[in-house]
Length: 95
Image 1 (cartoon, rainbow, N blue to C red):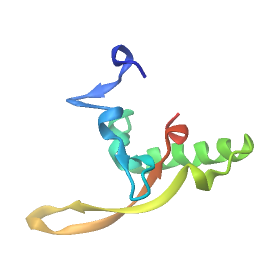
Image 2: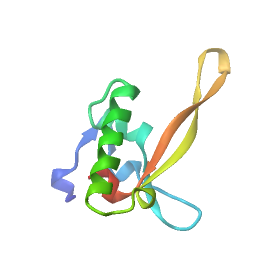
Image 3: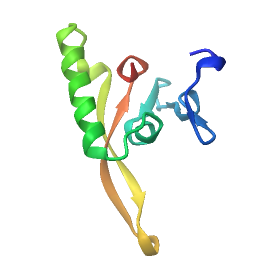
């Protein structure tokens, strides 16, 4: 995306959310992208991801190269934390 076409929420853009794993590969956390893409509920976004996995498979791209299951710790009230489902998405998966 060029700088003029970046989608942003607050001060975050798609490229701002990019992370690099220990092998040097870039990925985006689905939980981080959820709000940027306009999803207020995880279950709705998870359904969109499941449709994207199906489309990836139908186009003969191996989904396991683009959609990695992951967990993420989120903060709760009074300093507690909880592990929630997440996905690490490749740039291709984000499209």
